[in-house]
Length: 327
Image (cartoon, rainbow, N blue to C red; front, side):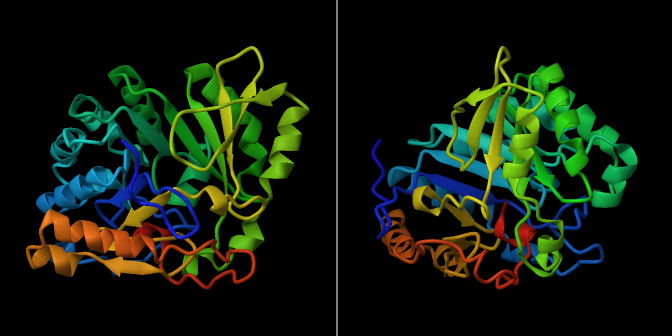
């Protein structure tokens, strides 16, 4: 199905990142403040029926990829049920999940059976004490979740590692070896200046070009590709199946090929991670809007999508936390 959603810069919008909750059981210091409790109230969360309507309309407009995100999506009760409902909708060809994996061990089988085929797992370190310092959580729960996901049949399983200068950048090679051992895909991500937690992102910022050059001294990296709708640029370790992606919103932004929008748990459609452009859908859904009418509102919303973010020119202008936007 060809998308009917094309923004004013000629970019087809075929990817919706859907936040099912802004809550999380970890406190990664670059994402959510340690004492933060100002979460969206449950009565403002989109219901499963409302989420299904939005995804059904996006699917009718040609959006093929849906990613369930949070906060931590597994905090939301009944997620396998929602996944099954979304996977069954016409036009939806790819349903994936982003998770911190702390609860994945007990839910992996149900999620895979429901129709989720691919997962991304946030993992910034392989050292238990460092993991606790970054997230306030336990590394062993994440490792257990990863192994359960592999056993359940998820493929690919992608490890997302946010590189922070002076904090975990010395583990890049260790993470490569970990992914080689277990058959995972690895993606490095640059820090982004979002919300109060991102004010110090520039202190931890390290261009991934530096990491790539370092890895090239140890591994033979050749151009690689991976299926999916995200922004990573991939290299492959020669002689292996390992792909390493580099997500570079600052050093090499990818705005000219941006194909995605984000729906927050309260039904706000965000048109750019690095801008405030948004379109509230919840009032329309609560008023009983028809699918046909909702299509027109979504088309109008896509016209608000900006050409690019301003992370480089205006760091810190985004006051919402990453967990509020939906990954």
